[in-house]
Image (cartoon, rainbow, N blue to C red; front, top):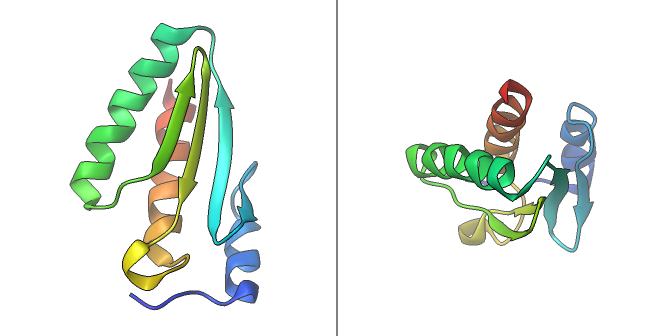
Length: 95
């Protein structure tokens, strides 16, 4: 998988609300009603990550979920990151 240029990243970010490019990765934060809801969504995201064979750097504090995506093998952001970001958005929106 080939690493995206800054322009490619900017173009793709235009299709995702709330995501930004920071220090070599795309990232976002989600707020949920409570910890139970946040953890439930994280579980669904985890199954999708496993299916795609691509895993985020993420953290959860109470009802807040922070997600960073980059492709470690490419040392930057690739198509894989945006495919997973869209899947994450679909999961969060379906909740």
